[in-house]
Image (tube, rainbow, N blue to C red; front, side, top):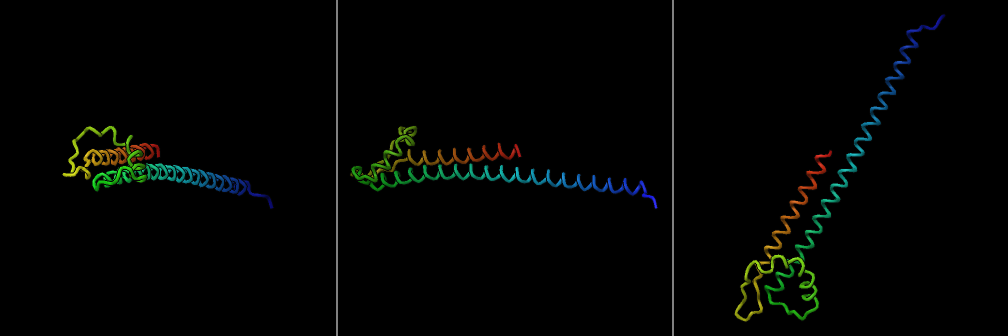
Length: 138
């Protein structure tokens, strides 16, 4: 019996199709892996921004409470918090006159509250910008 030339062509076509399918699957896997890497990077950046803004908010919140309750400025902890917050609050330091209690020990520092609000909004905007930039490229 002679080999059928059509049968040989069919086998060759099947092998080509199998090769094309494998190539397509490999391409799809590479795309999924790239997307997963970009998503992981995006999540890391967003979480870093949230942590940074959270630490700023925590420091400013401590300073607000220390001033509100009239903490001793000679105490090491209160001095540390005050010194760490100086560059954070300085752009807002003369925005409002802060009301004080009759003894002057307790201060309702509205400037700190404004700073907290501004930093929270800036953090939100930064996360939105990063998300927009990454999603646009995906």
